[in-house]
Image (tube, rainbow, N blue to C red):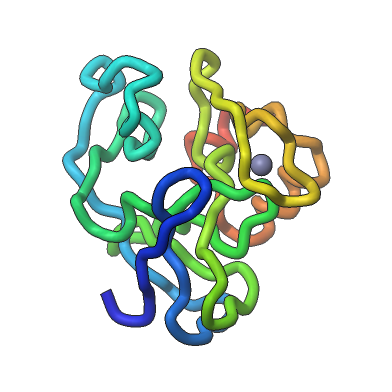
Length: 158
Ligand SMILES: [Zn+2]
């Protein structure tokens, strides 16, 4: 995929900008087989973070492409925008060449029964990645204003 490179990180691999991407840019599509919640692998298998929740009971499986490798950050420079033409990773601030692209996994999570330790390294790291509804109110509001919180998540976080 143009404009990105995969490099090792402390959690395995990550996607890094190979050139500058401007805030608001669409970076890549999130793709994969559409799966029901009941079709997910058990929690704790090494690849379980490659399944992205995209609806109340719906997930996308791994695509085999770069979008599988975009990591979580508690201080993200990207987010997921649910658009008519697909689910896009979009830059929410300018991303300089060499920076890791990351989004906050909590922005798409409405699960109740899934959480994972976070080692993203951000100074604002929450330590645990949990459902959107557990984020501080001001963080929720900022993400909603950025257009990176899908409808099924907003609907369960009044
Ligand atoms: Zn973190």
